[in-house]
Image 1 (tube, rainbow, N blue to C red):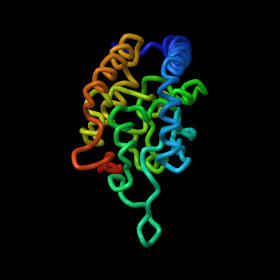
Image 2: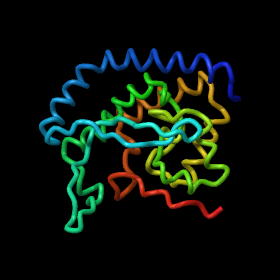
Image 3: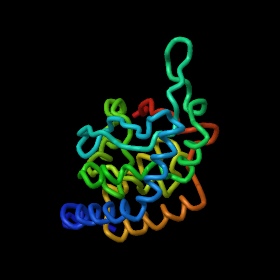
Image 4: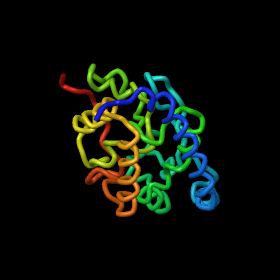
Length: 207
């Protein structure tokens, strides 16, 4: 399986826009219900905005539903993720509904439906020459690593899967990833790393 330049530059952006638009329309009742619920649960804070590196490392603001509160310790530092996760937020995270607002990022051309997940900006300086290749394509709402372990695999394996996708992306591979993503969401597989609310931070590679 090899990457198709025409698919990457012409067909995929068109499909991304159309799928995101249709999905937002279909999911609009859930979208509005979650907004109303999170307005109450999070004291008016519905969305979570954070800078993430996209294509070629260019930063953009990712949009997600807010699943954690802003509780801090006595020194003013945010508490660990598992202590800030609300009950509603946990349900939203387990069902992957927190990802719905990223469809707006897709409409804006900042993300794709399928691609390596956008990570944190501070990781950019930690990547080796192999790992940085994950930024040769737009980040995605779901990706090859997500259907092959998501948060239950280590960083080295995650990056191998991301770069494999960069080198092999195609229409049929994206359709396979979408189908397997839907299946994994339904069985709630691989949401969190064992013992963690989210995955452990990336601290750099040994090579």
